[in-house]
Length: 602
Image 1 (cartoon, rainbow, N blue to C red):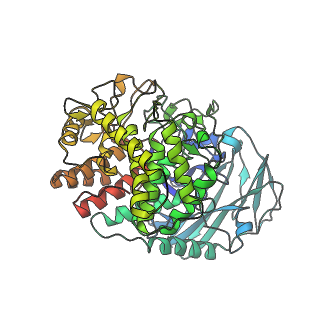
Image 2 (cartoon, rainbow, N blue to C red; image 1 turned 120 degrees about the vertical axis):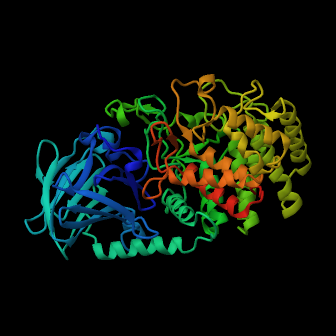
Image 3 (cartoon, helix red, strand yellow; image 1 turned 90 degrees about the vertical axis):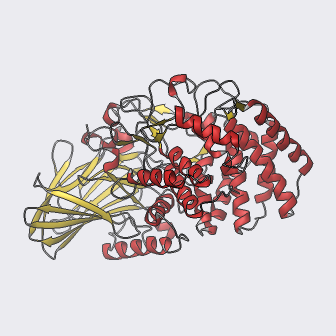
């Protein structure tokens, strides 16, 4: 098994797919050409036999440190071996030149070895396994001694590996590269469709310079001042890295199958576009000056949900694909034996009543920020509101995608309230057209129901049939249902602190109640802890807010990445990474600390 922990990985991104690079210098996860494509490197979910690209000094005692080159995703790993020092600079170029059509037909990873002091020899171990390690490729040498090239093909996919000579060795390819002070050596991996000719070699100097400048220019437009500035900038960069630059779809995470419970069954595929997560991500980006992304995502949304709103899904592929059927991959043993590894996500077929509310609230926020209505945007919102009205009696699986019995989850009912509230405001405040009296009536009906059935013993409850709380209730003030200092909210926070806070971090709900229909447990959900920071900040508990925020930011790895969950007992990250939900919650918590006042979304 791969011995790296989840926090040992750094992200490379070209805003279409992503690679994970370990502290040991191994690319253990890469799907090509898109984030949701089949993997060519899947050691993350098994071992080296499931695909990897290791590049590290032959000296087993060599030590490394790493960083991103400023506000970019150019990863610099510095290796020290005795008196010798060398660096590996890893990059996924954002585009391959000015020709967008040609760029879509290739994906590149460039690994540059730079000699800093003395001489160092690096070993390469390249194991290519296509289609989630189900396909052993046909590999052939096509280059020369001066310009070595390895070409691997399997089905629709082909890879060219250039820059250093590699020899076959028991179903992998190995080689060594020596580098002296002042020298550089570039190693290239290029994906291309197997029915097309191999693309020309990239100019590595241009690729590094243009990609670094692309990221720096984007980060330079981030509008933010206040505490935790570096963490906010890196989080927004990660959210951009999870956004497809061609389709506008925003993925929930870069990975699949990473466990919420080591050795357990809670291993999901998060490489898709959850409407909820994407909406919240978009709102974070709009809040920090990126209005053009709002228009792009709204266009994506229109394409994805086009047709009958009754066919609405909670998630889609990066271009709006609907078929993401869940199945298992038995050939992958899973991260630290956590099985099954699931491809696709069965939650796509669930009804989650909060999703439309999240979308409507975000579109309302975008409108308030100055994003103009398109020819079809308000018509889309009206259709979504009509769909919500038709489903108002229907219980759902809720924010946490439970696989147990549908319920009337309080958070879901509040988001229905929020959807109609924003619809009413769009008509009354923004001059748009719609059945405002009907929407107003439905909004008032939802408030009466929530106040009656969603509150028990003075606090909000998880759903109408329990007195349990869950962390989604921390979101009620965020959408304006109540103020953070509402007595019911303060009582809810007290119950959350009593029952869901362990080792100072917030868990989503008590898994032992069986509400989610799954076995095992899970770690503390990082987004929930950031929500508690915001709640504290908005109710004057500033010392507690700042202390929790500092602790949470300290859980990020050395390059600023957060996964979905954290195990405080074992001191390690859990779940898929990097997780959009965690990073967007960090951004909102930092904004709340800077503001120190309540500001509802939308």
